[in-house]
Image (tube, rainbow, N blue to C red; front, side):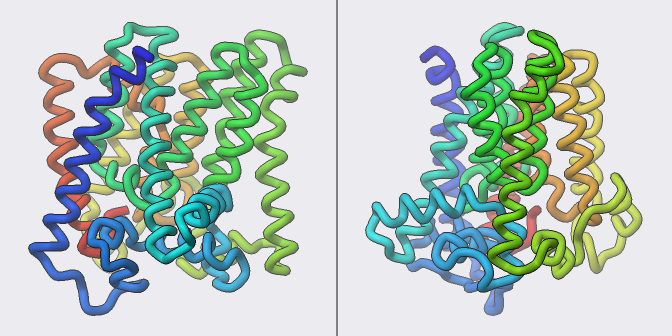
Length: 359
């Protein structure tokens, strides 16, 4: 309960701020006349502003499943499945699907914050856990933690799996690892690594394999199911190729970083990447090997997609970086990060609501 109390106030305040910024943005400024997807999926301005870019794909999958739109095959099933279940309980209208997505994202975020504060509290003072939660909430791309995207769900499941692994609770760790693997391609399954490391430190290699294997098996099983549904054994890679992205060597995407046709604000992307990379390096000094290894793998996956256009959003999943930041940024440095991060996140929230590409 102490962790809940510690994170509740910043959670509520940032939810209110995000909603107000989105509503003011769509009220004062007009959205573009042509959009990559449907411009106005809802007459409710808040639900409408929460459904941009990839959000429509998740809602479409929740409605129609896989196979109808090949590009949607790159999205993993847990988040749209939860949307469908909750939307059905809400009556099954179009707005019910959007409301379900928003509620799932924000409730999962609260769970993620509680798990994060609790995880930090195992090795550090409680105040560091509160700071880590706050620093995640004001990261510049934190808008994706509130809208119809699976980032909050992924973070909640991943942190929860590591938390239970730290406590030697292998069954909940394995279950949450499986669910994380079904939430986002490849990044979700990476949580098997810290689970395995913690199990190895406690009980040896056999325990490490037994506790980490379920997440890896879940990833492979979903790829097989998707193959059966679509008839394409490489359905995810095919979908990503249609977007012009896909697996690449880490940092290969830097080659076109300053191409104005690719990046509208390259210095932001570069700055976020260098900032996150530095925190990942510091994680090897300040954190346990399991957390440092997880941070490193997720960061490398985030920069190995052939493009950095979405990397600032992917960095939200590198949760050990926010623990490092909580340990090193105190006093005026912490307040400076909160001020700058919150200011940029306000701008990015408005941009997202107005159909500008953020990440």
